[in-house]
Image 1 (cartoon, helix red, strand yellow):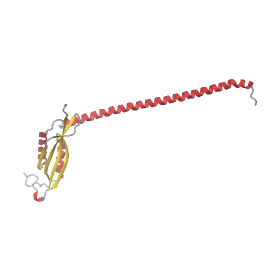
Image 2 (cartoon, one colour; image 1 turned 90 degrees about the vertical axis):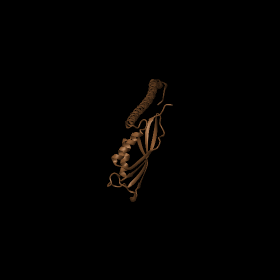
Image 3 (spheres, one colour; image 1 turned 45 degrees about the vertical axis):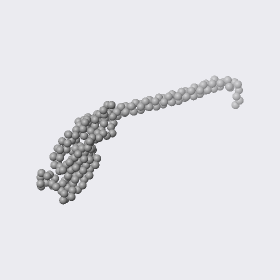
Image 4 (spheres, one colour; image 1 turned 180 degrees about the vertical axis):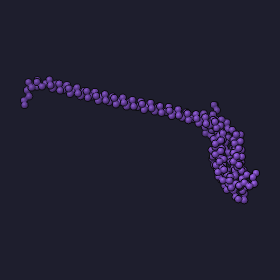
Length: 204
């Protein structure tokens, strides 16, 4: 088919319309892609802001929970008498009461001078080490004594070391010296216990 000037003139409007529509379509596709990219960017920005807000909320909630936990802890420590100056006279009375109630034989103890421990402002920790010696019918006597001290002491009682040795039969003596027929002690224990108290650091 021979292309003539007349044919070109005839199809020129249609060709121009095709080019215009193609250009318009390409431009609309570009705009749609651009808007899609902007929408995706906005979604990512919104998601990032939401994640940051949720992270801040979690930190606030964790801080609030930590404050409540510490408040409950210090309230418990205060009710136990662990906060403040050490109450050595109360400790002595408690040991005497346990000795009588448990009918422990040959219980002897000695407190070393109080020593400061590593502190964490505004609180300072102090420890008084006690050397404890007693005779036992069996190991349960020692476990009961330690449990009583931890449960009722106006201090945080930590066991540093305990050594238990068997008493030779020739050296055994009654568990209760006031009761001649009572069972003899079989074991002898020596323990070192740290009695820890907490008080506010002094402002310098």
